[in-house]
Each structure stands twice: as structure tokens, then as C-alpha cells.
Length: 313
Image: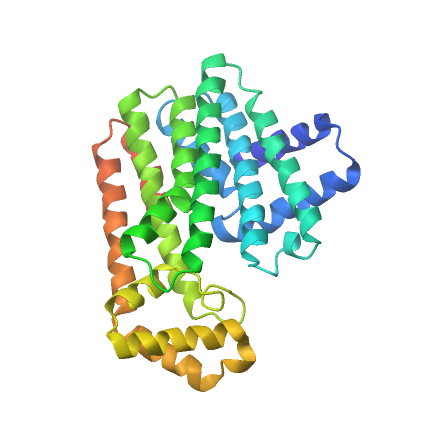
């Protein structure tokens, strides 16, 4: 099965029957293309299909759920970027926010339309529940993140609680939907959902670490966003160093003109001296090992296990 080709055809069919104007369809296709950078081409759909296939699902049924997940995740990414005022190089950040929100809502509705094409009523009911819960958790996590950004310090526990709802919720949901469409029993559905949670946590930790010192294109530190490196530093630095970090954060928030080469050097020194990279790498490795442990223990074929292991990296 040519996954990419099948997904493309399913999306084209969905857009054709949607009754949307040519201009909107063109924009949605362009935004789909632009979203491939982070997870690869149709990354969310691929994750759903691989999970469905691993549990013995029918490709046609899995395909509809996969397209729904791809569109759902795109809508979530667009809304997240608009709210965070981040990823300014992406096309939905180059249009007025009202237009971006409008089209994200349109894409979200399309995801539910794709889901309604599931031939099995039970699949539709259960997958819809997953979609609804994902949306509620992502919104709740985003709001908690807003609140955390205004705090001087949060605990590591608070950080992981938010990420479990946001980033992990989507990957867990994709795996859960794939397992449901694959007719997995409840125990296997739960294990694959946990596998997805691990994938989401690994991805978020990597992004947090990569973006923390990328002040030119990412807004995490500039906006005081409580990413894992920042939260870790706030919890391990002594009083004097913590004040230095807060001072650097205040300068960054005022604008990059106030945050020059010396300040960037100070930040990098704090990151290196306090073992921030090592800590994040250890946590990433813990979730990787947990994901591999789950795969090795679930009752699926060795070929299917190999596909899931490839997702872990």
C-alpha cells in the first residue's frame, strides 16, 4: 500500500466533496505541505495507519481515521502557533490571526467530516470520543501553559502535567485511534495509547532542548515559556544564579536588542554548567526505553513491532 498516495487521494476526495471554495482548498493544501517539516509527510496519518496495521486493521477503515487525525493535528498546530505567536515562518503565521483561526476551524471541521466516513458505527463512536477528549485536554493544557508563563517558577511535576495534556495527548490519541480501528482489545489499546504518550514526550523534550537557545527564530525563552530546560534550571539553580537567569529572561522579554552576545553567552554557560542538556537527554532516554519496553511486550507480530520501533528512533 502506497500510504502517501492513498492519504493524498483521500484528502483530495474529502476536499472535493466539502463544497469549499477553490481558494480555501488551495490554502489548506498549501498548509498541509508546510506542516510536513516537523514529522515528515503525513506524519500524524502515518502514525495512525501504522498502529492500525500493527493490530490487524483494514487499510480502508484505517485510512479515513488517519486523514482525520492528520487534519485534526494540523488545526491544533495552527491554533497553538497563533496563540503562542510562534513559528513565524509558517504560512498560517503570515496571514491575519482572524483568518488563521477561521481556517484552522475549517480544517478541524474537515477532520470530523473525515471521521464520519468510518463505515463501522462503533469505530466512529469510539474515535469521536478520542477526538473530543484530545481537544479538551489540549485546550486545558494550553490554558495551564498560559498561567505557567506568568509565574516566576513552576515545578517539574507541573511541567510534565501540561505536556501530557498537550503534546503527548495528540500522539497518544493517534495511536489509540489506530488501535481502535484495528480492532485491538482494550488492553492493547491502552498499551498503544501509552506508547503514543512516550512518543509525544520524547518529541516535546527534543523540541524544548533544540529551541531553548534558538532565540532568533523561536520565542520560548523570549516569552518566558516554561520549557523543560527553563523549568529544570529554575529548580536547580542557587538563589544568585536563579536571579541571574530571571534577569536574562527579563532582558530577552524586552527584545533581542537588549539581549546581545554577552547575555547569550551567560545563558549558554548556565545551561552547560548545570547539566541541563544531560538532564533533558536522560529524561528523553527514559521515555524511549519505556516505549521500546511497551512494544516488546505487546502481542503483535515481529514485523509490526519493527515498524513501531522505527517510530521510536
